Image (tube, rainbow, N blue to C red; front, side, top):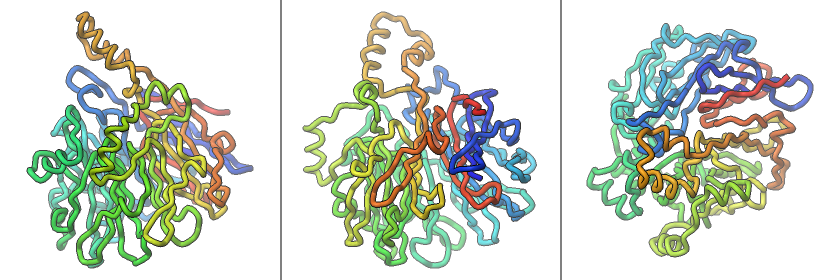
Length: 487
C-alpha cells in the first residue's frame, strides 16, 4: 500500500495521507487519522521578510528513521520559525508527538535534516543545519540518540555547533579511515549585493563571507579542512549529493549552486584532497541549481546526477517570472572558465568515461517550475528509478513587474508597512511532479495517474516504508498551504 504524507504548514491546516489499495498510487490520510499536527507557518514583519532575506520561503527538511529500534520508521520535522518536532510511529500509520519528552526542544531556523549514527552506538542521531535572516537563528544542532526515544543536544561537544548560514550537511567517510566526516553547504548571509565568482572567492579567502565546509572527524571532533583538501570554489549552495562517479569506491561530492556561481563536482583524489572536475565532466549545467540527487537512473552500473532549476513549464509563468538570459554575461562567465549554465533541470547520465551526457530535454524532465527536492527513487517497484520533484514557493518573488511596482510605491509614499509590499507579490500554488521511468530515457508525467496532483508549497521530502507493507511512502514538508481531502 503506497502512502503519500503531506505536512502542511498553515496554522490549523489539516494534514492528509494518501493511500490506494488496488493499483499503483498514493492516497491522502487526514491529520486526525495520522496524529501529525506539525505546522511550519512563516510570518513576516518589518524586521524579517523575504525583502531582506532571499531564502525566507525556502522551507525545511524532514527525516525518517527507526529511532527506538521497534521496527517502525519515525519522523523528524525541521521548522523555520517553529521548533523541530519528533513523531513516534505507533503503528497503522499513527504517529505521536514526543518532542518534549524526547529532548527535542531547540529553536532555530532549521533547514536541512541529516539522519546519521555519529557516535557508532547503533542508534540514529539527528543533525540539523540552520540558516535564517538573523545570526541568532543559525547555530546548527545535533541531537544525540540516548536510546529509549531520549535525545541530548551535543553539537558543541563535536564542534558541530557551526553558525554559518547552512542549507544541508552530508556525512561521508571521505578519507576512508572508518569514521564519518561531513560536507556542509552554506550561503553568504548578505543577499543585497550578489558578487561575481571572482569577487566572491576573494571575500571567502579574506573571511568576509561564509563558504562550504569540509569537516574531518578527528576522534569525535570535527575540524574544518576545506582549504587543506583543495576545495576553493563555493556559492549559494542549495543541493548536495554524495556519489561515487568513477566506481573507485571513494565518495565524490556534487554541489548545486544558486545564482551565478557554477555547480561543483568534487572528485575524491584518495589522498585527502578533491579536484573540481565539473567543467570537464559536464557539457552544461543548470543556472539556478536547487535540489539534486545522484543514483543509477538507467541501470548501467554508473551513478547519474539530476538537478532542478526554476524552469517554468507554462509559457505565461516563464515570461512573467524567469529572468532574461544576458548574452554578454553568459559569454563572460564562459571566458572565465565557468561552465555553460542554462535555466533548465538537468539529468546528467554518466558515460563511465569521466564525462556525462545531459538528457533532461530528451527525457521530458527539463521543466518543473519552482522546484526544490529532486529524488531519483523507484516508486512503483519496477526496478527503474522514477523522478519525484517537490514544487512551489510562497510568493512569486521573481515576478518581473515587481521592481517597477515597488519603485512606484516608494515614489508615491504609499507603502509604510511590509504587508503593503508583500500584497503586491503574486502567489501561485503548484502541484508536485512525479515522472515515471519507462526505460530508455523515456519518462511519463504520472502525477494524475498515481494520485500526486494536489497543489501545495512543498520543499523537503523523504521516503521510507512507514507501515512495513513493502512499498515506499513519501513525507513532505510544506509551507503555508492547506491541502485538499480526497474521497
